[in-house]
Image 1 (spheres, rainbow, N blue to C red):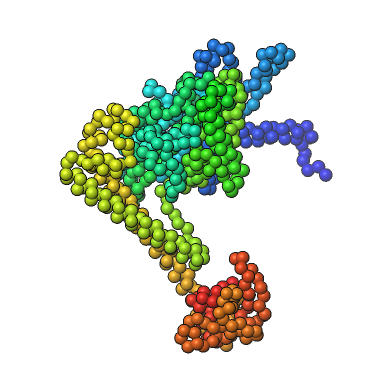
Image 2: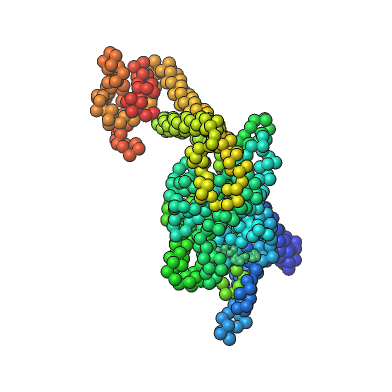
Length: 613
Ligand SMILES: Nc1ncnc2c1ncn2[C@@H]1O[C@H](COP(=O)(O)OP(=O)(O)OP(=O)(O)O)[C@@H](O)[C@H]1O
């Protein structure tokens, strides 16, 4: 039966129009969603789904190099709509039949930058949101990936005339901290390292290779220089010096090719006042990573050292790809340990960190293979999700069971002890420093307290000749630093004690609730039969007697006191079940008397291994 009065053709055309409208609306919605995601909108569902955040992936195309133009290369990359990258595959010049045939593929990213994009534009779109998150107390990472000569170092470090993401980020951090700090006190610590041939080196204080160590903050390079910086200019000098120490070699693809992965870490700390005028300590870490070129062996020379380097670069990048694949596939085991690079990047990829990846590509058709690889890699990286939490948020979950609670209490007590020891050491240091500052000249041990390099090994000559910064205020600065550390440790001890108290309270509350239930049951159950299901572990049955139908337990408590026996009546015969992998005997017990109610008391029940269900 017809339900519509419209003719068939009318309804078809309406349907078509509706479909088109729907399609347009969907496209608009998608565009809007992606714009919000690219802008780091915290409300954007695609960006921050519950506790997860997707790695943001950007692509930057560099201009054609002079040698590429001279070699007659053509541009095979086109940025469409500020998001899409269209990669064209030209047919081989010798393939006359297909000379005019083109094949191509679209890749969509959070944003794509054409060769005309400025450094500031790249920074604002990719990293400024991350810097904001770091200032809010989160950890953030930016890393540049791409083939050799694709523009990674240019994007990260840039030049004196057009500084890159590292410098712009630090500039931004300094200006924002100064504006927000409630008391003018803030600290910016830098460390700069490289991973070269599977060894970790300090770029601010070159010396022996560093050993990686796991600690509470994750994987750290033991003995790495933490340089306290006071201005952007100082950071610029440090970065240039660090980069000077970086391993670079000319390759066929790049005159000054970086042969190592460089990681710059910036830890910021400052204080703000909240709405209730309470002072809050904010601390965040920003990691900026310039990876070595992901070139094929042919792109570099075939000499032994270069081949070894290439193999190691590929090994660590392969390890990075394996980690990315494992993360995307949601595997439980992520092979971070396969290379030093992935060990150091563990935090940035799978941890509680906001991560941005900038894939650099060359527009030349001569680098088509590398560009395609980079785009595929970046496309895959879009799928990685990281957890979102505050770096300085210390939330300890209250465990459900009593054993877990006792374990946590023990753990907290241990941590507390360690912190107290550290606090005592810091006090000791402060006392020594105060004594030393009264007795000029400053002894060398003061410098050793700093983690900055010894004067002879300072990376920067200019910095050495600045007495106002390094010599005069040094003792005061060290004193300040130690005092800040002490304050932090004291806060930590306080919060640990509070946490311990909370866990204890929770524990006793649970016990009290159990006692209340038992009391209520025993009050009701003088004549009325109260039934509780109990599981008796075999261990306990060795120490107590168990008889059917009337089971007799010897209570260790009562043995010590009166050597009396408690009676309970089993309403069923014991059945063997498995509890936590151990065989147990299970009974349903009736409890008609006060004696039995004592059996139900938690203390006795725990000793007997009786578990209520
Ligand atoms: N966006 C850009 N604008 C202008 N010049 C650029 C740009 N990107 C890269 N270049 C230039 O291209 C050359 C190679 O860039 P860069 O050294 O940054 O490559 P890379 O990816 O770090 O290479 P490698 O992995 O070998 O170190 C440099 O001379 C650099 O100045």
